[in-house]
Amino acid sequence: MTHEAGWAHAPGALRGPGWLREPTDPNALVPSLWSRTAHKVEGDLVVGGMPLADLAAEFNTPAYVLDEDDFRGRARAFRDAFADFDVYYAGKAFLCTEVARWVAEEGLHLDVCSNGELTVALRAGIDPSRIGYHGNNKSVPELRRAVAEGVGRIVVDSSAEIERVGQVAAELLAAGTISAPQGVMVRVTAGVEAHTHEFIATAHEDQKFGFSISNGDAFAAVRQVGGLSGLRLLGLHSHIGSQIFDTAGFEVAARRVLGLHARISSELGVTMPECDLGGGFGIAYTTQDDPSDPAQLATEMTKIVEHECRALGIEEPRLSIEPGRAIVGPAMCTVYTVGTVKPVTLDGGAVRTYVSVDGGMSDNIRTALYDADYSCTLANRHSAAPPVLARVVGKHCEAGDIVVRDEFLPADIAPGDLIAVPGTGAYCRSMSSNYNHALRPPVIAVRDGAARVVIRRETEDDLLATDVGAR
Ligand SMILES: *Cc1c(COP(=O)(O)O)cnc(C)c1O
Image 1 (spheres, rainbow, N blue to C red):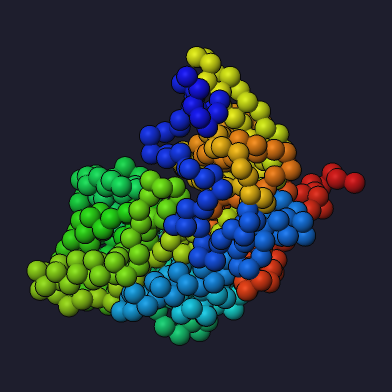
Image 2 (cartoon, rainbow, N blue to C red):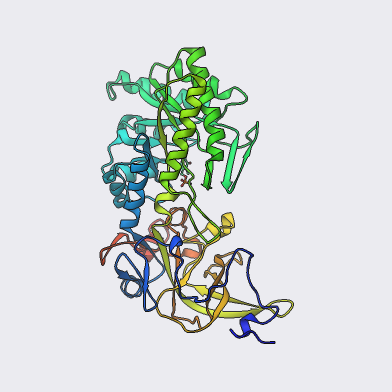
């Protein structure tokens, strides 16, 4: 029996993973996966008032398209929902000078975790006192620069680093370069590891970040900071993971972190003014994902902290959070041009449709690196063809160079079509590479029908700029 929708639906046809629903209309957008202004007009995907086909014609593909209103809206939503917190945008998710300025304009602080990210932040004119500096292996020159620039908080991650930053700060104080001790937070591991829908609470943490609460290292680190006159201990810092959908992991972590906070207060007589609960709030990449909005998160996290502080009999410290993905992730999509469409017959006779695009793992490594799922849509026309299960792949020399593992696209998808992948704002451009000497795509900000390049496409001259032998 032949399925009414055609060959792709014959018995033995690929259906994809269980969570993937076959759409009745493969042209339709699933709004929860797209930035706020994204919609289709007769098949043309429009973001920020700009048809992606027009952007592709002007700027070529692949290109990241950044919906400015969406980014600002999400930043503001966190700012408003967490009004009693400091909200640090985690710049490692995506950072350029323009976006750093939006972050500041929307009232957020900024986290960096490298010298390069600090450079971008400072070049954007961000007030250094509103910058947090992370990382498990900051060098002495990096620390010296951060302290001299007046970075508000350095999150220390090892005993060696505490010693280094203590010495650097003491020297810069003595030299008059800075006028007050350097604020530091102690990164602790709370024995909670969260990833998407699950979290695991363990006694031991076998990973490079932070000081363990359970084995006493965190307490010892706090004592070490306390003994250094160049440093001012602001509080404890905990970041439990990424792409987290419920607050159960935060609850366990907050209990352990605030427990230590209280112990430090009673045993060392040190009252720390702050406490950072990290980032990691999840977004919807596919219909499997059901993230909470900032207001829900704020309500739950506030309740958890109030409850713990009351139980411990301590005053609530000033809290901070560090969302990265949840602000920039949904704000960006990537637009590609289809180059080839190849039906591949598998054992058993089923056919998988491989759609090759002009980018891939150099502009989005997350599928290969984390087995991440994405979705996509035909972006330049309306199709009357039935849906076919497709795998969107890149142009790199790796079989694992997959952009979208499973998605239904119109069966007449063809070379020259545009495909757009939503949710590519976080950890795509920031993790992009020049693999196969690919030129990294531009980031084009769109708003109210206008487009503005905030990062231009790389050129062959950029590629060769460090190749000393090039002529
Ligand atoms: C990566 C990171 C974040 C941001 O994580 P998201 O999943 O992007 O929200 C926040 N804090 C720290 C310390 C991080 O390393």
